[in-house]
Figure 1: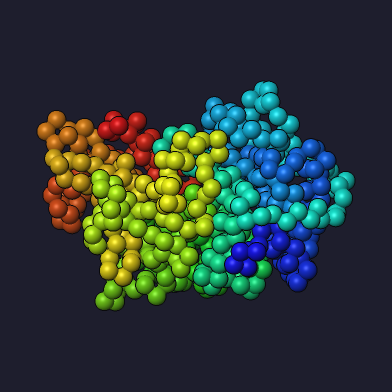
Figure 2: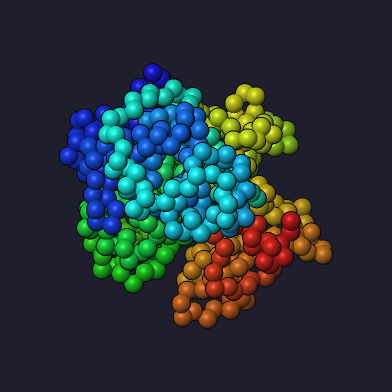
Length: 506
């Protein structure tokens, strides 16, 4: 096998043999040991075989987070099937289109997922709850024993859809096996306890969410983000690790109970999936008191490919500027910043597009060869579409999606830069910036701000604040106040939705 390569199934087999009675997974205060999870996933694997699911076929899941989703990951891997996790926050129309693309043999749903299915879904439907439990209970406990190859597809995860209809990224056994390496780089072991709040249909859920389990530790799963419940679970299970997107970190910091909660067990909080900005990072470090790590990655890269280590989080030190960086590429990742106009590496300090080459990269988009060719070069480089620059030590300074860049009077303006400044204002809870048409300049920045409760700050005050902290041409011409911002399930700001709502440039 390749670099100590192991599939999801072989790792579960190993832990079930080595630590059968150790806690593997907790949900709603019910804990399964590794032996119990291994047994349940073997029974489910045999049930899938009995229902005619063959090697290479897709088993779709449309459900909020629940422990059976992990069971299905292992079950599919034990028979060589592919788990396709679908986003329950999408519309019924989008789900119908994705199901047609996925061509699954079976779909497993909870109550929410069932409500999104068409009246005639065109494939067998299995419901979590009594039906799923009965199927498992009456199936054989013997492990089917499939041993996957490195290039075999383990998961199909549909991209978050910030640029249109989601595409199915095919993630291989080899790519997902690096989750075990990531766990080591994050200091996880069999003694770690990982709180998973992100949705399991997203790589930040099922990828990061598998890390501690693959290391032999304990995973505490939440159905969805609930700040009060999070503050209860951390001391209850002595949680050591968690991953949160910036929007959730901000909500946690703004909660009434964060200052009285016992968070002393927390060792590492990882953040990513969207730019957080050094202002919010500093505040989080002050309030939560644990180590922090920035993780940069995406569905197509099977998860994290760049880390900003805890020792680089030093707000008061001589290298505090590194808080604006998402870190350096991991040892098994090649990273370039490329000038899209020339296809050559951009000079240090100049913005270009991040290109990646690593065994973690997807094998392609399911049923979409054209999109695969657009995304992956013949030499194996994946074009991320993210704008960034490098310093002389290899630190990546992420700006924005290239498509979200605003060109105003010939000047390139990155919305994340404006958002970072406005997040530093005490009246601002959330902010999103888009480009809107301008008669003279072509485009100009528009900032949409959600104020903190009780704040009455005016637009003029915030414009003046940005002018005190940014070059004038970068400052928003207008500021609009809103009750909320459109986000997808992983916490990413949906800029294309903002452009529809506020008349942004296409």
